[in-house]
Length: 167
Image (cartoon, rainbow, N blue to C red; front, side):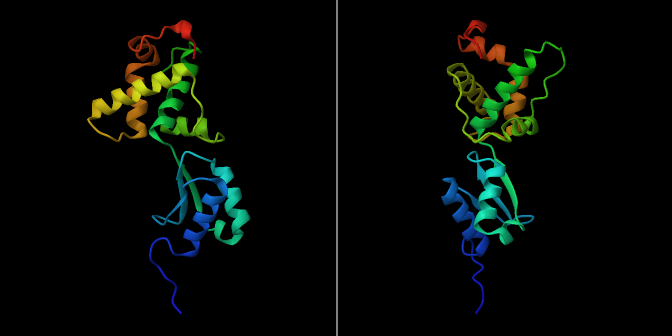
């Protein structure tokens, strides 16, 4: 008997579904450069790795694990990083980029709850970046670059928030 190779039918696809069910997340198999379990936001890489090992240790050992970030998570992370770095007052350019945003969220299940101020800034940033690129989808790089060009203070002023509103 031959193994069914159509998408969604192999043992790694079954593992992705089992892990997704266990964690309540939409996890899929990406067979691109090598098999990987991929999901957006949700559980951390550590949580998915642990769940996959619990379901099938042998198969889990052959997989990579990759959590992608939604536009909202990237924007919130970039805003938090920019404000934290800006409060240091060191005068150096803020290292707000997709890699530092991913590192910020590395051990945090997402979505992370924003403050009311952060939610307003996230909405403003995403609106402006989408408008700049005239696109319904923007990349993490475009979001981080858009924030670095504008700065959180300028976005806050544009949205009627003053520094007394806090982070």
